[in-house]
Each structure stands twice: as structure tokens, then as C-alpha cells.
Length: 554
Image (cartoon, rainbow, N blue to C red; front, side, top):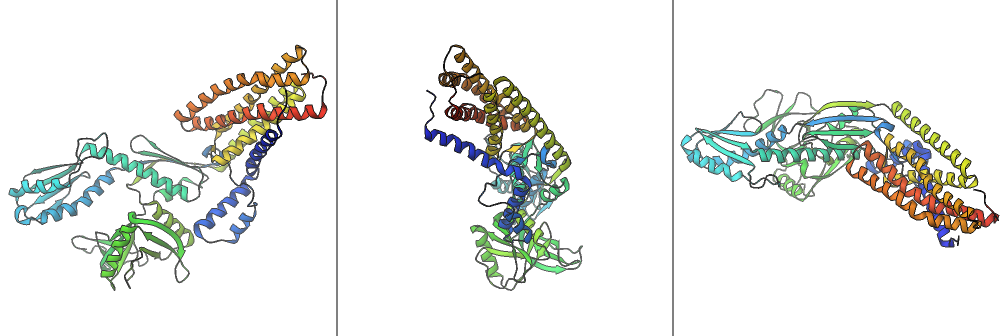
């Protein structure tokens, strides 16, 4: 009969209450968002400003604070399409290979003669040797640096092709290795961009590969495309180089194996640095904004075990000598080594404010972009357009809800009211679940919610029509309601299961707007079954136990 155990009643009410509690922060979106941003800022910088304290106090800490993330079309933000210059990686590979090849050839100078690098394409290293008769030996030496391509598509192929003609030794990157390098470069760019964008507190960015060498970046809530470009476009190449000397002439000859690098804090001063760094930013494991002994903003950094060992050995052997901290081909600091630094940590200080030190820490933690990226397309969606989309979405949802509620009440009376309460609860539970999941709400997502509102009452219609059939057969109220819910169960499950399968296909095979629609529609299917079968039934049971009706007009 129509009986619901006490424990099940409590479970249904707690589930509904918990869903509504999770959705509640979205009713105070701006206040909760400022609260969350302030907490994130304090955790990241370790500094609490009066504005942060006010924002944190604006929302009780014991209440849920997860929000439905708004997509680019609802919140506004920046859209960029970048092209990765993989040729830079080819050039870097040949540049890093040259010192090793040079030293290996120089070790057999008696056979190959003097060696000199000549101008060559990005994917090639061309070396002239002084003794053409030693070319065979030079090719043998160069082939020591050849390794197999580390991809499935490149099985059986090498990464380099070595050939000699006359007095010129040519080392060329093979096509298989180019393909592998291009793929690695784009994947690394995606990861670094994702870390940079996520770490500055933006919400639900879309960062994905397009084609062979392009990256699509969409970030809701950021001020402009220029602001996003400033963050992504910064290379943040960090190295620690030995200092050979200082000059005031930018055209001075630094000598073989050295480079002339300008100073940030000393205009007109250039440092002569050894090309080979002691350690690089790739060996950095952490960087955090901090303050130096004078209270000025700085960045504390820490190396991994390998970097700490190399840094400790170098500083121990060069006490009293300067070394340069080079960021993006500029010397930001050139301190004198006072003692061996064996702990693997240090500090970068200079003329920077708190925001700049925080930004630098983010860039250093994320690492350097492996190659330059040119932005082919950039677009800023203003918050006004996003607000217009939100207003339009709200209006469509309200109209759909009002029409559905009016139809249900007109068709089923009091039971229509129960169904309408279940529909409204369903929508709020969708928002609550999306908040916990961190799902992004877009315009197609709003369409999914509107569709859920329209289809959520399907289960109630099936149940109510089945109850009507039982009433026509002469069954009493309790038996008719019990039979209606029990007999309609299989039809409701089957109908929603087929829709669920279709939604899953859209989610896994679709992208962008299609996936946004699938997310809200899938969640709506689950919550609508729960509210129709369990919550609506509980409300009807409460009504029957309270009023004890002898007959039912439906």
C-alpha cells in the first residue's frame, strides 16, 4: 500500500534540503564570488587587506560557497586563437646541440681540424671543419648524438640525419622527429597556458588544441583580450648565469661562448654572461610572492634536487663572485655570492610591487612557453553582453516554468501544484549539483534547463494518468495513487534512460555548446526522476495522511 518508511521520508527530505542548500549561494552570486576571491587571494599571497577581510565577512563560512561557473557567453571575458611557432623549438634544439657537437669535434682536432658553425635553417646545424679529409670521422662523431624517435608513429626512425659533403657537416632534424616535437610543443603550450590562466583565479577557462599548431583560449571573467595576452604571452625564461663582466656599450663584443644582456635596474649597463647557465627555470619546483629583509616585494624560489646540487656546487666554488638572475633575456639581479647556497632556495628582489611579484611567481611556477605564440584572433566579450544573455536566459526559463505550472494546475488541480513544486525543486537541485561539480553554465546549458522544465513533468503526467485510470475502475484514493506510482515506474525509467543515453553521446562526442547542453540536460534527467517519483509521492502521502480524502477528483 501507499506507505513510505520513516527513514525513507527523512532521506528524501534531506536530499531535497541539501540540494537547495547547495544552490543557495547562487542567489547571492556577487557576494559569494567576492568571498571566494578574497580567500583565494589571501591563500596565494599570504597578505590580508581590509578589502579582503570585508569580502570574507560578507558570506558566512559555515555555508556552502561553491557557485555555478558562468561561461564566456554569460559572464563576458576574452577569446584568443594563438599559433605556436614550432620552428622556435627546432632552432632551440640545434642551438643546444651545437656546444656538445663542438666539444666532441674539438676533442679530435688533429683529425677534423678547426670547427666553426655557419648560418643554417632553423631545423639544421651546419658545421665547417678545417680538414675535409676528416669528414668521415666527423660524421661518426656526430652520429653519437642520434637517438630513435620516441613516438609510436616514429618507430624505426631516428631523430637526426647526419651527412657530410666537402668540408661541411650537416645535422638535420628528420620529419618524424619534427612531427613529434611539434606535438610535444603544442601539448606543453596547452599545459603551461592552462597553469598560468588557472592560477590567477579565473573560472573555467576553455583551453584546447585546434589543428596541428593552434591553441584556442577562452577565459570568462577576465577584463580584456589584452590582459589575457599579457599573461599568456610572457615567456618567463629564467636562468642563473655566471657573470664575466659589465660594460656600458651595447655593441661590445662579449667573446666566444658569451652573451651581452641588458640590466633591468641599471639603464645603460650590460652584463657579459656565459651562455651556459648554471641552472634554469625548468629546475624550479616552487616560487611564491614574499618580502625581502627591507619589506619590499620579492619572490622566493626553490630548486629540485638536481638544481639544488648544481647551484650548491657552483656557489661553493665561486664565493665572492657575482652571478646573474636572467629573466626573459634581461638581468633582473646580479648579487655577489657571500657563501655557498646549499639549501636549494633563494630570493628574487628588485623594483616590483605586490601585484608584479605575484605575477612573476605565477609565471615561474608555470614555466616558460616552449615557443613563441602569435595571436591570430582576439575578441573581448563585455560583461554587458553577458548580462544580456543571462537576462534572456532567465526570462526564457521563467516563461517556460510559468506555462508548465499553469498547464499542470489547470489539468490536475492540487496534484498539479505538487508537480509544479517538484519542477521548481528540480531546477534548484540542478544548480546545486552543478555548483558542487564546478560545471560551467552557458547559453546552451540554459537551453538544457529550459528543456528539463518542459520534460520534467512527463513523469508526473504518466503517473497522474495512470491514477485516473485506477479511479475510473472504482479504486479508492490510496489504492489508485499507490498503483499509479508503481505501474508508471517502468515507463518513466525507460523514457529517461533513452534520453540519458543520447545525452551521454552528446557529452562524450560533442564539444563546446553541445557539451554544455548535455551537462545540464543529463543532470536534469537524474533530478527530474528523483523529484517526480520520490518527492512528488512524498508530498501526496503527506496530503493524504493529513486530509484523509474519501474520493479524489483528478
